[in-house]
Length: 255
Ligand SMILES: Nc1ncnc2c1ncn2[C@@H]1O[C@H](COP(=O)(O)OP(=O)(O)OP(=O)(O)O)[C@@H](O)[C@H]1O
Ligand SMILES: [Mg+2]
Image (cartoon, rainbow, N blue to C red):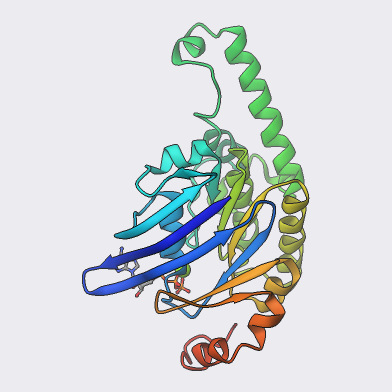
């Protein structure tokens, strides 16, 4: 589904990613862990087209997307959430979902100007899809609230619902449970498992090891931009290189 071949990203003198080899199989949940500053977000930025590698290549479903712009990658079927939540705070929850779906349909601007049947049909479909997502992420009751006023956990779920509104095949999640309590975290894990059962593929950055164990089929560990381990959650947990990488960073005892 997704293949990274020797992907590097250099920022001036800093090697944020160093010849990363990664393969994300279809309909699996793959975890991406590593200490703070390891390059996890940079990796997702490069896959989603927000940033581009300085070396190596990225393929999605056989197509080279190494230098493809983000809106085209979205259209190919890749969606993401952000570590620092990016919602339209002044808009309602429902509006946030509707706006993210634009550009997915086949109706043209002309269709919308003349309010054609095709346009109306698509609008109805988008609206129905948005309502289904609200239901699924327990946001129906706050549909008309301003997104910026929601509690943190709700905002995180709205981010995930918004990513799914584009009907992706691959979802990239950057610390989806950050700021959530243990019950919310557990429920989010169940949502991820449900996505897999529906045929989606997930790449998830996460510091909470219990969530990693709950949802991941396999895990990659990054340290200083390099993959230092890859395997099942259980194997990773006992890998001496991984243990050492985490002990070496006493600013991050969470994982
Ligand atoms: N646009 C940029 N310009 C310069 N350096 C950057 C840029 N983006 C990231 N970096 C650097 O690249 C390294 C990796 O950062 P990244 O955000 O990918 O880490 P991370 O693994 O997501 O960390 P965290 O767990 O704290 O989110 C860091 O040293 C960071 O300062
Ligand atoms: Mg990050």
